Figure 1 (cartoon, rainbow, N blue to C red):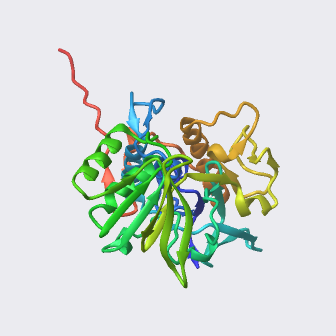
Figure 2: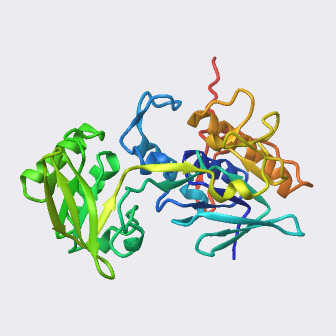
Length: 353
């Protein structure tokens, strides 16, 4: 059983910033996310997409923002359960909640903050016969352990940042990397497209466009794929492979959270925005894009604000008999759980004769 003060479901930017605000209150956090790494959409879908509305950053890449948030919360030593979906929640007699994941990992906390962005992400799967037969037997939709592909023949399908980035990365790991896209143009960052072209020219990536995977072959596990290349009169190729990774993006869904007894409106969780973004179940909050209320704006900036007020309310729930006096970080500094301390700059007063 993993025990913590605030259990955060969703490790996107809002969930990560909640760790920082909770840490200022000396509250410990643990995060659950179905994705294999922190960052949510920013890390999984568009890590190289520029964001222009983060205070203090005229422009910041989505992946860099995640890196900065991770560095910001490092002193507060959050725990992570990644690659697992939060499936069930059980209220306890002592006022805490037990959340169990798809892999059976159990977590207990007096406060649960749902920061799942647009919900749990499920991969968009190609319509191929026998696709499910080969899942985890050569077909996968996320790359959790790149080293698992060392020395193997890998086929990636897709035209976005994720397909490009993983093709580039695995070119130095796998024995053979083939990237297949149904168009000749890619949707990803220009520098990634140029890098893939360079690796193709160096013989490190085989690029097949325009083309589409039309069939899978194998007995107990995937052994080969069939590829239709070109238009209606194009040719069909058979490629021997150890792994087929279709990266066609992720489809956001509330998933099991929709069955937790929360008040739902248009696939979002209704919260009380007049105070603390609590749901209809005391002790369960929803922050970021996953919630809804009058005037809601789905901006990262708004998620940061909601996370801040949620943590203040969580402190009062966990310590009802304590009075917390807020201190600005410019005055009190930051005291990490690792013993580190960032002192606030001291004011210098000079007398004038």
